[in-house]
Length: 175
Ligand code: S3P
Image 1 (spheres, rainbow, N blue to C red):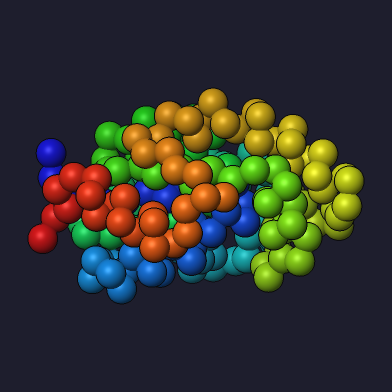
Image 2: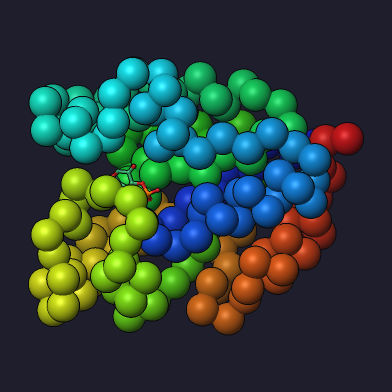
């Protein structure tokens, strides 16, 4: 079946946006970073949205924009780390496009998230062992959802180039 859009999924810090931007160049498709889209769509920052409305409201608002972008064609969507794990979001993504899980070890994620480039409310203020333990627990909660992706690839082994090749070989990408 023709692939019209690609959803990149995985934990915070797994490199979804970096891969998404690279795929935009390689495939000549559009790229949407769901966190940026969220902030533009709701005219706020994720940090502020969490602070004012809490996580439950964030998940509902996030779900709404997933259904919005799920109709875009020739588009790569980097989703937020929690996006596939709430409601039927993973099913919606699987039905509407190719889902790819960038799988990384707890240690690699902790190393990447210990010097973050962006504000992430869920890990704000955490470092060292506290961060490592949080990632370990959250990842085991989330993996049953991430594991429903159509393609699961080991980001500790595969670089961005490897992911690009897998995606190009994954099926019929819309021309
Ligand atoms: C979240 C991940 C973030 C962002 C929000 C919540 C999560 O996105 O959506 O802070 O629940 O894992 P990134 O995975 O792009 O950091």
